[in-house]
Amino acid sequence: MSVAALVMGAGRGLRLGGDEPKQYRMLGSTSVLARSLALFATHPRVTRVQAVIGEDDRDAYARATAALDLPMPTIGGATRQESVRNGLEHLAGDPPDFVLIHDAARPMTPPSVIDRVIEALAAHPAAVPALPVADTLKRGADGRVVATVPRAGLFRAQTPQGFRFAEILAAHRRFAGSEMTDDAAVAEAAGLPVALVAGDEAAFKITTGDDLDRARRLSGESRTGTGFDVHRFGEGDHVWLCGVRLPHERGLIGHSDADVGLHALTDAILGAIGAGDIGLHFPPSDPKWKGAASSRFLAYAADLVRTRGGRVVHVDVTVICERPKVGPHREAMRSAIAQILSVEVDRVSVKATTTEGLGFTGRSEGIAAQASATVVL
Ligand code: MG
Image 1 (cartoon, rainbow, N blue to C red):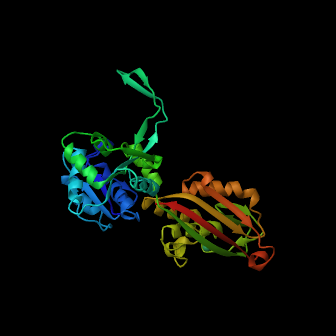
Image 2 (cartoon, protein in one colour):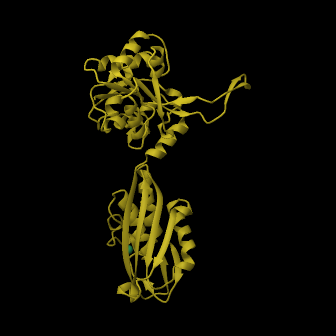
Image 3 (cartoon, rainbow, N blue to C red):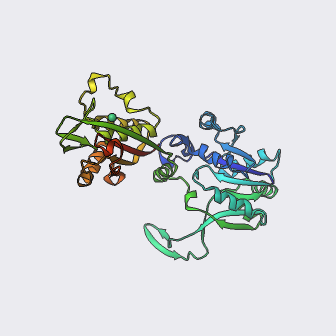
């Protein structure tokens, strides 16, 4: 069975503001349209993907889809229905068995929805993913409720809507010139039975700025880095540990303030964005960093993440030593790290362990620390 996907990105959709159609807005490193196309290009049961775009958007399309191996786009018409018909006519040169017609503005649609629509087409000429209406519906006029509309049996239709190709092509030809808001309506007008399959809240349509923010939150790419550091005990009467100064009978030796916890954490954050390690950015050979507060290193790494359009979502530091005891200072350490990173305290974890008297930490020759950092880009 051949399954073609027609991804509709011809609308102007300027309700979001700005003069750029919403399908070319970015979700992290990819556009809304490219992400919608990729839903089908990477789906194992979809054999062909065809975009339908606006006349003026050829350049924007070429830029947005450079990373995808796709055929030339079809140019849409004056209405959505005309644009779909253009796409169907284009596919008719080499007609597929089934066609899935999808709004480019629904880039977060889960693959399971696509599967359900394709499966339904084995038994039905048309299938629509939909969710039952949960809110009470009101008819209103002039700012007042006119009536309460019974919601029983009402559904919100989503996309992709699936069809047997020959039948939906015939229906679109027959009803050319009308302005129906989805393709199921065209199928219904032609008398085709349309099956309902379960939709998904994640298949929401981007209409407002809030929707775009929601899609961005859902589409963020998560990366994790790890760090490890050791400093040796020497002369002194205090140590810096995870941004907190602790009185101690010995100090830690290092070029900077030797805060082993913040060093491990700085490396973890640099690791998450593939930006080398702390020694690369703050060479110990550079006298500038002599005695430097390690909070500067950590703040620098967090700034690098922000510069790349990302944010630190979670960090976890484990301090490994017999003494000083970390427990009484844990909350102060979490607060210090949260402040340096400009994140909420609940995104920061500080833990401690001993090595049961074994090894250099067990002999209290030094302190080790390891850390992990999760960033979303
Ligand atoms: Mg160090």
